Image (cartoon, rainbow, N blue to C red; front, side, top):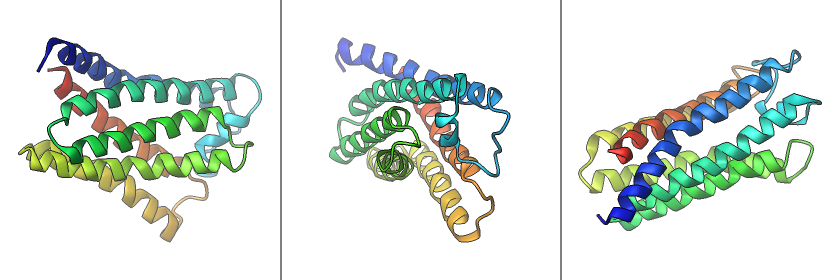
Length: 195
C-alpha cells in the first residue's frame, strides 16, 4: 500500500470514529431543546422542522455527519479495493452518506425529497453492509464479515418489527437502533482502517 493510501485510511478511520459522536451529540442536543419530542410518538426528523435551535442543531448534525461519512467511505474504497464487490459496497455506502446529507438539507416539510432521502438512508445502509460482508468473507476476514452481517441484520430486523408489529407509534426508536448499528460498525471498522 502506498503512503498516500495509508494517510487516507488513517483520516478515514478518524472520521468513522468521530462521525457517530458528532451526529448523536447534535441529535441529543436537538432533543434537549425540544420539550415536545417523544421517543415513542415522533420520528427523529420531526426535530428538523421545529423552531429555534432544535431544527438548526438536528439538520446541521445530519449534514456534518453525512460529510464525515463520505470521508469514511473514501477509505472503504481503499480498504476493500482488491475486490470489485467491496468497491460496490463502498459505493452504496457513499450513496447512503449522500442520503444522510439530503435528510438535513431537505427537512420533513420539504416533500417528497425528505421522505425519499430518509427511505434511501435507512435502506442503503444494510444493503451496503450485506455487499461488504460478502467482500470481507471473500477476503478471508470472517470475523469482520460476521460482525458486518450482524449489524446489517439489526438494521433490517428493527424495521421489519416496526412495520409488522408497530411496537411504537413513531419511528424514532427504530431510526435510532438502525443508526446505532451503523455507528457501531463504522467505529469497529474505523479502528481496523486506522491500524
